[in-house]
Structures are given as structure tokens and as C-alpha cells.
Length: 425
Image 1 (cartoon, rainbow, N blue to C red):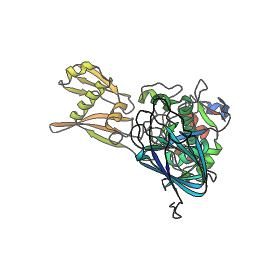
Image 2 (tube, rainbow, N blue to C red):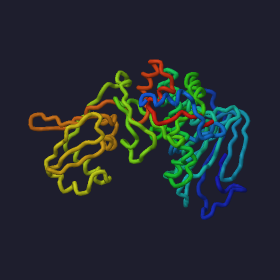
Image 3 (cartoon, rainbow, N blue to C red):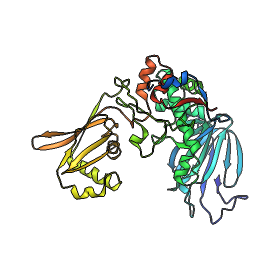
Image 4 (cartoon, rainbow, N blue to C red):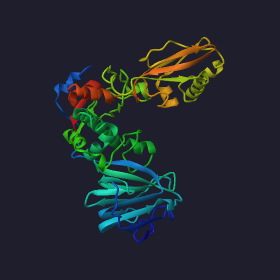
């Protein structure tokens, strides 16, 4: 069967649009061979979960799970499909598969995503591209930058959290560590949803709240949920961290801090309320102990030119690049690198090195930089500890604390002493 979005009878006339695109959708039976504080911050106000900014019920969250697909197939029992441009809905009895040939999509005038179709199943389970299975709805959206489609999964918040825990944390870890992660991830997601950050940054409706990637949070699917992750999600249902103004906070987390957590302002340009840098000796005996990397002077000079172009170093530094380079003695928890070019003193945030050279050369933001001289040559050595940006909750630290018997409220109060645990639905 062939479906023409935007040209079928009753389709809305879109101003200044002629025929925007064509998608083929075919329906077939699915094959049967489916493969399947400072320390405690008053211990979160004496362990109480405060009532926060109220949300009437558990919200649905829309997650971008696949991008720029040339073809999309969705299968399940008793499917309900809606084509949004023609505003037509159809039910299909039994097990069916609907295919979208997004490579056939053609656009003339639009420069923003269009919601093409939404699919659900009365049985509750959908199979995406013969692989991943999801509860809830799947939306097919035209990609902005290519003749392809993006796929958005919509489900309730606690189902989303239960699947996420297996991706963002080891689902075999103690339940209290998983609960702490559940609260952190829920806070992050709800902040993204309430602020409309993705939509605002794009400048148009994106049809999703956040994406499943390290840019935001990595989401799971139906098979990533297990009794432990489901229990952690439901036991903390509706619980988030709020800042000193009782607003849902953008809560960050990372794998391993390397001895001390950072504030958002240490890593990014924007300041985020209520964050505190805390000592964290708890992650030391977990994960990779330490790392070291080597950089040549020529690579450092290329970095300096990049930092100048980005406005992190003054434009006048170009005049002194031929002068002798001297590094000021550094320490692991210093936040800046200081150096001289001749008699001129400069500095930049350590986090810029990680941004420029990448996580494989600079795995964390807690490191010491020094000059190593051998014979007549010299190079820069980075000795560090940790993994990730270092802001917020240290996951391996949370693991250690849970193994010591700390509950999730105490863990959260340690890493977020300026925040309060609150129940919003």
C-alpha cells in the first residue's frame, strides 16, 4: 500500500507548501522468527521527602531513540496508526508490520521537522526495525537535514527511568545506588521537559523532550528493564531534586570523579544554582585507577590557537606565540592551567583540554599537567583520575556508599548538599 502524506483527501492545506514529501508505507504479517553534608546537607532535611512543585500525574516523556533512518519498520499486535498530515487514524487487527521508506521523502520548502505518523498497540508492545521493543507510542518524524526519518519513543516517566538505569548504571549494583540514579535521571529529564530546552535551542518544535545519547541520557528499551530497575524506579516514583528556589534542578552525574566533584561552572559556561564541589574518596578503588597521556608542544600550540578563536584566550596571544613557552606548576584539583609565553602570563580552564582533545586523551577534568624532558626533547604529560565531566553525582562513589549501607537519600544529600529531595507526582 502506498500513502501520500499531505495529499490524501481531507489533508490540511499547508500555507506556501506544495507537495512536501512522499512516504511509502507497506503492511505485512510479521515473521514468526522475531529475535529477541557538606557531608549530608542535613541529611536531606532529616530524611524527609518534601512536597515540591506539583505535577498532577506521572508525565509522558518523548525520547529521540533513532536519527536519520532511511527506512523505519514498526510491528505489533492490533496496531493503531495515525497519519498526522491527513488526520486519519486506522486500526489493524492481528499482528502487522508497517514500513516507512523515508529515503523516498522529498521536501521543497520546509526547514523544520514534521510529525508524520504515530503508532501504538493495544497489547502495549511495539517492535522497532525488527530489533528493539518498546512500551508506549512510537512517532515517526521527518529529519530536518536529510531525506530520512527520526524515531521518537513516548512512554511514562517511570518506565523510561526503569529502562535507563540499565544503560546509565549497572543494573546489578545495590538497589540504593539505583534509586539515587533514578532520582538524578528523573530530575534531569523533568527539567528538560519543563524548560523546553531542546525546542528552544532548536528554534522550532522538535517533537521530543530529550535524546537517547550521552548528550542527554541513554535510554533503554523493553528488554533493558528488570525487576531491580523497575523496583528502583517505582520506589522513587515522582521524586526529584529541587534547588534552593524549590525549582526542579538540572541534575548531572558521571562515572567517576577522581577524588572531587565539580560545579557546572567549572565545566560549562552557564552557572547552575545550588551546586557544591565535594570531596569524594569513595570512587578511588573502583574502575580505572588512573590515566596518563602525552601531548607535544605543537599540539598544545594548536590548542592555544583554537582557544583564542573560541574566545577563551585573548586575541593578543598570537603576537607572543613564537616566544618561549613555560608551564606553571600544576596540581590535580586546580581548575586552570597557567603558562607563560615569554613574560606574558595566560590561563585557561582545564576542561577546555578535554573538550578539544576528547575523552580518550583526557578522560576526566581532574588531572595534573607537567613537562617531561628527555635528552633534548620535551613533551607534556597529563596524569589524572576519573572518567566523565565530574559534575554532580559520582556513580562509582554512589556504588561504594551503597555497599557501605547508605540509603539513596543519604547518597544524594552527600553529592547534592544544596538540593532537597521532593515528590512532585
